[in-house]
Length: 210
Image (cartoon, rainbow, N blue to C red; front, side, top):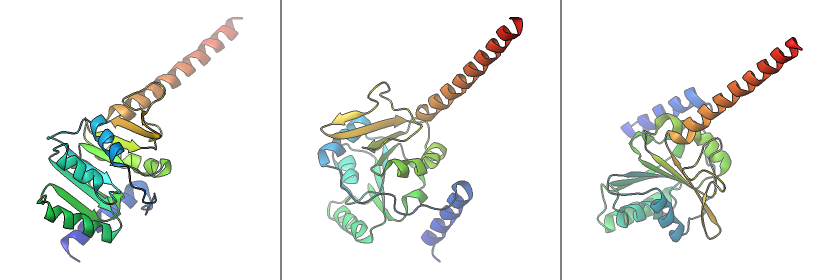
Protein backbone atom coordinates (compact mmCIF):
# COMPACT_ATOMS: atom_id res chain seq x y z
CA UNK A 1 0.00 0.00 0.00
CA UNK A 2 1.54 3.36 -1.03
CA UNK A 3 1.27 6.68 0.79
CA UNK A 4 -1.81 7.82 -1.11
CA UNK A 5 -3.65 4.58 -0.43
CA UNK A 6 -2.76 4.75 3.27
CA UNK A 7 -4.07 8.31 3.50
CA UNK A 8 -7.36 7.35 1.82
CA UNK A 9 -7.72 4.30 4.09
CA UNK A 10 -7.07 6.44 7.16
CA UNK A 11 -9.60 9.04 5.97
CA UNK A 12 -12.20 6.31 5.42
CA UNK A 13 -11.63 4.97 8.91
CA UNK A 14 -12.06 8.47 10.40
CA UNK A 15 -15.29 9.00 8.46
CA UNK A 16 -16.74 5.65 9.57
CA UNK A 17 -15.79 6.30 13.19
CA UNK A 18 -17.38 9.75 13.27
CA UNK A 19 -20.35 9.58 10.92
CA UNK A 20 -21.12 5.94 10.07
CA UNK A 21 -20.97 4.10 6.73
CA UNK A 22 -19.13 5.94 3.97
CA UNK A 23 -21.52 7.18 1.23
CA UNK A 24 -20.55 6.41 -2.36
CA UNK A 25 -21.93 8.34 -5.32
CA UNK A 26 -24.64 10.78 -4.19
CA UNK A 27 -25.48 12.53 -7.46
CA UNK A 28 -25.50 11.84 -11.20
CA UNK A 29 -23.09 13.77 -13.42
CA UNK A 30 -24.86 16.85 -14.73
CA UNK A 31 -22.49 19.68 -15.74
CA UNK A 32 -23.17 23.14 -14.37
CA UNK A 33 -23.57 25.69 -17.21
CA UNK A 34 -20.48 27.87 -17.44
CA UNK A 35 -22.51 31.06 -16.85
CA UNK A 36 -23.76 29.55 -13.57
CA UNK A 37 -20.19 28.55 -12.68
CA UNK A 38 -19.09 32.16 -13.05
CA UNK A 39 -22.02 33.42 -11.00
CA UNK A 40 -21.28 30.89 -8.23
CA UNK A 41 -17.69 32.08 -8.00
CA UNK A 42 -18.75 35.74 -8.10
CA UNK A 43 -21.17 35.20 -5.22
CA UNK A 44 -18.43 33.39 -3.28
CA UNK A 45 -16.20 36.45 -3.91
CA UNK A 46 -13.44 34.18 -5.19
CA UNK A 47 -10.04 35.84 -5.45
CA UNK A 48 -6.29 35.42 -5.34
CA UNK A 49 -6.14 34.31 -1.70
CA UNK A 50 -8.70 31.53 -2.09
CA UNK A 51 -8.37 27.77 -2.36
CA UNK A 52 -11.39 26.27 -4.10
CA UNK A 53 -12.52 22.68 -3.56
CA UNK A 54 -15.07 21.33 -6.04
CA UNK A 55 -16.61 18.13 -4.67
CA UNK A 56 -17.71 16.10 -7.66
CA UNK A 57 -15.76 18.17 -10.18
CA UNK A 58 -16.87 16.38 -13.38
CA UNK A 59 -14.99 17.83 -16.36
CA UNK A 60 -13.18 20.38 -14.18
CA UNK A 61 -14.93 23.50 -15.46
CA UNK A 62 -15.17 25.07 -11.99
CA UNK A 63 -11.48 24.37 -11.36
CA UNK A 64 -10.32 25.99 -14.60
CA UNK A 65 -12.70 28.94 -14.30
CA UNK A 66 -11.62 29.61 -10.71
CA UNK A 67 -7.92 29.62 -11.61
CA UNK A 68 -7.95 31.20 -15.07
CA UNK A 69 -10.73 33.78 -14.68
CA UNK A 70 -10.82 34.51 -10.95
CA UNK A 71 -7.12 34.04 -10.22
CA UNK A 72 -7.55 31.84 -7.14
CA UNK A 73 -4.41 30.48 -5.53
CA UNK A 74 -5.37 26.85 -6.11
CA UNK A 75 -8.32 24.68 -7.12
CA UNK A 76 -8.78 21.05 -6.07
CA UNK A 77 -11.37 18.66 -7.45
CA UNK A 78 -12.64 15.29 -6.27
CA UNK A 79 -14.15 12.99 -8.89
CA UNK A 80 -14.97 9.25 -8.97
CA UNK A 81 -14.73 8.95 -12.78
CA UNK A 82 -11.13 8.07 -13.59
CA UNK A 83 -11.33 9.03 -17.26
CA UNK A 84 -12.58 12.52 -16.36
CA UNK A 85 -9.70 12.92 -13.91
CA UNK A 86 -7.21 11.92 -16.61
CA UNK A 87 -8.79 14.39 -19.05
CA UNK A 88 -8.56 17.22 -16.50
CA UNK A 89 -4.91 16.53 -15.74
CA UNK A 90 -4.08 16.41 -19.45
CA UNK A 91 -5.58 19.88 -19.87
CA UNK A 92 -3.75 21.07 -16.76
CA UNK A 93 -0.43 20.07 -18.31
CA UNK A 94 -1.33 21.57 -21.68
CA UNK A 95 -2.17 24.92 -20.06
CA UNK A 96 0.83 24.90 -17.71
CA UNK A 97 -1.34 24.92 -14.57
CA UNK A 98 0.53 22.28 -12.58
CA UNK A 99 0.50 23.29 -8.92
CA UNK A 100 -2.58 25.47 -9.46
CA UNK A 101 -5.09 22.72 -10.25
CA UNK A 102 -5.19 19.30 -8.60
CA UNK A 103 -7.69 16.51 -9.08
CA UNK A 104 -8.19 13.45 -6.88
CA UNK A 105 -9.78 10.31 -8.29
CA UNK A 106 -11.62 9.43 -5.11
CA UNK A 107 -14.64 9.76 -2.87
CA UNK A 108 -15.49 13.39 -2.10
CA UNK A 109 -16.46 12.44 1.45
CA UNK A 110 -12.80 11.62 2.11
CA UNK A 111 -11.50 15.04 1.06
CA UNK A 112 -9.50 16.94 3.66
CA UNK A 113 -11.25 20.32 3.58
CA UNK A 114 -9.13 22.17 6.12
CA UNK A 115 -7.29 24.01 3.34
CA UNK A 116 -10.43 25.13 1.51
CA UNK A 117 -11.73 28.68 1.68
CA UNK A 118 -14.47 27.98 -0.90
CA UNK A 119 -16.32 24.69 -1.47
CA UNK A 120 -18.57 24.26 -4.50
CA UNK A 121 -21.28 21.61 -4.72
CA UNK A 122 -23.76 20.23 -7.21
CA UNK A 123 -25.01 17.17 -5.39
CA UNK A 124 -28.55 16.61 -4.09
CA UNK A 125 -30.31 17.75 -0.92
CA UNK A 126 -29.70 14.35 0.69
CA UNK A 127 -26.08 14.37 -0.49
CA UNK A 128 -25.58 17.81 1.06
CA UNK A 129 -27.10 16.56 4.32
CA UNK A 130 -24.63 13.67 4.45
CA UNK A 131 -21.75 16.06 3.82
CA UNK A 132 -22.91 18.71 6.31
CA UNK A 133 -21.22 17.35 9.49
CA UNK A 134 -17.88 17.17 7.65
CA UNK A 135 -18.24 20.75 6.43
CA UNK A 136 -19.06 21.94 9.93
CA UNK A 137 -16.08 20.16 11.46
CA UNK A 138 -13.35 20.80 8.88
CA UNK A 139 -13.97 24.19 7.29
CA UNK A 140 -12.29 27.17 8.92
CA UNK A 141 -14.11 30.38 9.88
CA UNK A 142 -14.82 32.57 6.88
CA UNK A 143 -14.99 29.68 4.39
CA UNK A 144 -17.84 29.87 1.89
CA UNK A 145 -19.93 26.97 0.61
CA UNK A 146 -21.77 27.46 -2.68
CA UNK A 147 -24.35 24.89 -3.74
CA UNK A 148 -25.97 24.79 -7.17
CA UNK A 149 -29.75 24.14 -7.05
CA UNK A 150 -29.83 22.20 -3.74
CA UNK A 151 -29.80 23.71 -0.22
CA UNK A 152 -28.02 22.45 2.86
CA UNK A 153 -30.87 21.68 5.24
CA UNK A 154 -30.47 23.26 8.65
CA UNK A 155 -28.09 25.97 7.43
CA UNK A 156 -28.86 29.64 6.82
CA UNK A 157 -27.66 31.35 3.64
CA UNK A 158 -25.83 34.67 3.57
CA UNK A 159 -28.81 36.10 1.71
CA UNK A 160 -31.34 35.19 4.37
CA UNK A 161 -34.96 36.19 4.06
CA UNK A 162 -37.16 34.86 1.30
CA UNK A 163 -36.14 33.52 -1.08
CA UNK A 164 -32.94 32.41 0.62
CA UNK A 165 -31.13 31.75 -2.66
CA UNK A 166 -29.86 33.73 -5.65
CA UNK A 167 -31.41 33.02 -9.03
CA UNK A 168 -29.74 32.77 -12.41
CA UNK A 169 -32.38 31.96 -14.99
CA UNK A 170 -33.98 28.74 -13.76
CA UNK A 171 -30.99 27.91 -11.55
CA UNK A 172 -30.74 28.46 -7.82
CA UNK A 173 -27.49 29.27 -6.03
CA UNK A 174 -27.20 28.85 -2.25
CA UNK A 175 -24.31 30.65 -0.56
CA UNK A 176 -23.24 29.92 3.02
CA UNK A 177 -20.49 31.30 5.25
CA UNK A 178 -18.86 29.25 8.01
CA UNK A 179 -19.62 29.25 10.92
CA UNK A 180 -22.52 31.72 10.69
CA UNK A 181 -24.53 29.35 8.49
CA UNK A 182 -25.05 26.85 11.29
CA UNK A 183 -24.09 28.70 14.48
CA UNK A 184 -26.92 31.22 14.05
CA UNK A 185 -29.41 28.45 13.35
CA UNK A 186 -28.33 26.45 16.39
CA UNK A 187 -28.33 29.50 18.65
CA UNK A 188 -31.77 30.49 17.40
CA UNK A 189 -33.02 26.96 18.00
CA UNK A 190 -31.75 27.13 21.59
CA UNK A 191 -33.39 30.51 22.13
CA UNK A 192 -36.66 29.16 20.78
CA UNK A 193 -36.55 26.20 23.16
CA UNK A 194 -35.95 28.41 26.20
CA UNK A 195 -38.65 30.81 25.07
CA UNK A 196 -41.16 27.98 24.78
CA UNK A 197 -40.17 26.57 28.20
CA UNK A 198 -40.52 30.00 29.78
CA UNK A 199 -43.98 30.40 28.27
CA UNK A 200 -45.01 27.00 29.65
CA UNK A 201 -43.77 27.89 33.17
CA UNK A 202 -45.56 31.23 33.06
CA UNK A 203 -48.81 29.52 32.05
CA UNK A 204 -48.40 27.00 34.86
CA UNK A 205 -47.75 29.78 37.36
CA UNK A 206 -50.82 31.67 36.20
CA UNK A 207 -52.85 28.50 36.44
CA UNK A 208 -51.68 27.84 40.00
CA UNK A 209 -52.57 31.41 41.04
CA UNK A 210 -56.02 31.09 39.52
